[in-house]
Length: 304
Image 1 (cartoon, rainbow, N blue to C red):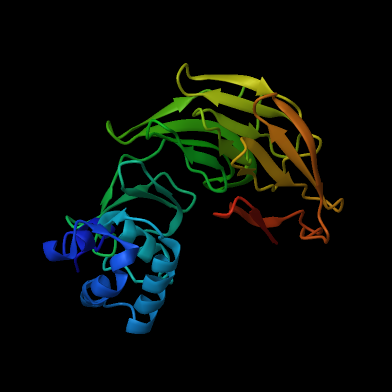
Image 2 (image 1 turned 90 degrees about the horizontal axis):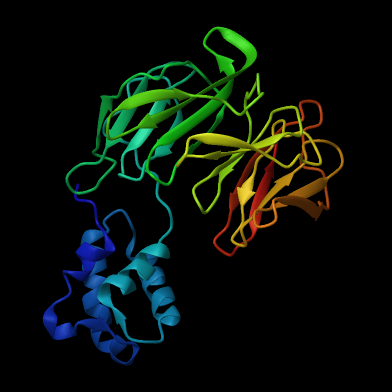
């Protein structure tokens, strides 16, 4: 199955339709565009394609390249689940999309990792799995992110192999170019990192909270150094952090207060983040669900 992109769809528009989409000529080109979509998006019904097309035409009130126009159409299509042709072959847990387009997948609470590489058409469905170098430590439930330079950093872990509830402070970085893991120091003075929350700043630094305490730390990948951040108003245990478009970080406290706090990157300070209208924390375990930034700039927090 060939992976269909906006670029490949744009290349299928005949020259007599013009080099750009123009809303003035929409009636003349609509059949051409819909035929291209119908022929190539076979996982979608014609009704779904039509709806996406007309949503795009209502949005685009100017001349646009065919590439950009198809990007808008594709963004309006409903999501579809598809089973991969090849399984990872491990007890899959945390996954990361690297900047080179491959996907890393860790075997749960283990040192083994596998890599999913898309096929020559860019399809992950038909991609292939292969082993990468094993990490130095076993871990599960930990702070992690893909750094701006393409490397992966993993910090701590609530579990480490057969050791449960150890809240390890082991920290390491994976270099996908060299296929190597390198252990680095944890935040200064942190004997435990555990399942700490974290976010990546726009400037490439990693901001992390210490599990079950109010301490924070900031990692600079350029000089491989940690610095202390400002103490939080509450413990970081079990929290979900979100980086907002205004360069602030928001989280909901995992207690009965229904309070939220916000960190301002520019001033390196915490401020009041407001009060939730209802409790979303499972108080018996102090657990919360995921939190995600929506495309309208708002944040969705899911209860435990």
